[in-house]
Image 1 (cartoon, rainbow, N blue to C red):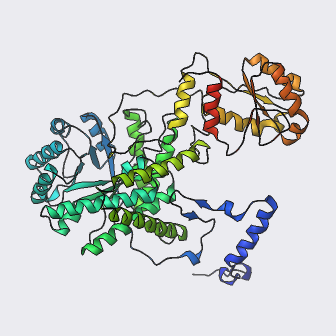
Image 2 (spheres, rainbow, N blue to C red; image 1 turned 135 degrees about the horizontal axis):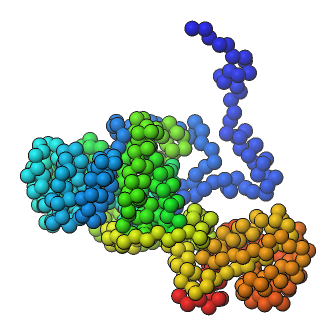
Image 3 (cartoon, rainbow, N blue to C red; image 1 turned 180 degrees about the vertical axis):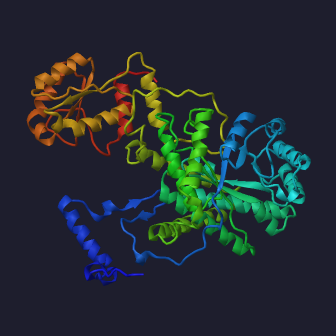
Length: 565
């Protein structure tokens, strides 16, 4: 074969090596021109981990065998109503296991015709349902060794007897799920989800071994359930860190049993408003779960926050996984994130924070004794997260950013509530969605008039920003359009029928027109005048700007208009 010789300037091994210090000097030079500091490029997570703008070989860590060797993952969908047609549609559409939160008396009927040796069944923790499932397995034409799935019991009280019975009858059937979703759904951070679930798992191990199971048998009963979010890299790192943490627990316990993971797309990140965007969120979350090495993945349908999903939503959910598996071939690479300096470093730091939190729970007497500690810690994180959601530092597309006031509401039948583990359940969009509901309930949609100064090019940036902010609360934002004089702006304001106006323009137009425009608006009947920006000589009642307390401004606007809650 003929070799193509490259010119010297295209030979990578002959480029001079660049150091981090040289890169930093160039970055600092650019930042000095903008007045920003290097710290503005560093993002801090809710666990206190500082995400750097650059990772290099200096951040490399020793390799870990973090992902199991497997082909793809288990496509698992959840059912909360006994609908045999929906179950068969899922199985025929690519689903490979079923997660059933159903009453015991309905199981035999809905599973009629399901090949139980091909489609593992995961239950939702009900002891009566677990007993019914064992009877179904016992009567089904399936070998005991081929029975898989999980009864999802909490191994205390009567559930322990069912666990021991299942161990004797069906050696490949798991019986316990360590459910970390309640910690996530209460607003907790990733390390809090990991550390608390680790402490919960250790409490389950103690209960199982105290009941007479060997350490190996106890470990073999457990499956872990984690949330997958649209924060792609954090989800990948969380699943990788979880396996490392559990491997350490197994090592200390004298066994070598890998962690089995079930990733579920986050309920907290789902929105009721503009729910179609949820398809994008769950796609990224599923991608991250697959890249992170999850053994099973459940994609929540895009309408899950509204109520019971319809067949279209279920089809999109399962095809999200089918596409990533069959067309993108994500399941054909072992631990694809391995070797990424960023992901490796993030995995390491997340594991360290989670282990420290786990130790704190253990020092407090274990998970049962430390439930108050867990609740308070997660509540503090939710408060911090709520503050960032409120000022839109953590934006929610379609809700707090780029809302669509003309969207047609999606109506669904109410769905059963998910388990909470004794913790509150929150959604990141809930505060803004409550304001949208309030605005929709008014006889006439409340409005804030955009008093735009000058031509479109001069005011469009701030007008768009202001419209997005007030639309997030459900306010209509009529726009003056291109204007030439304060009197013209005031005339259009008066014609709108609004009571509140926000001046939108450029710094140049503010210098000349902000004061007379504010005065003209007052004379035209404006009861409240705001300005898009941080300062002005005009006597305005407030300012809106990037990072302003958006939720507080929206609430105060409703109060000013006298809207009853």
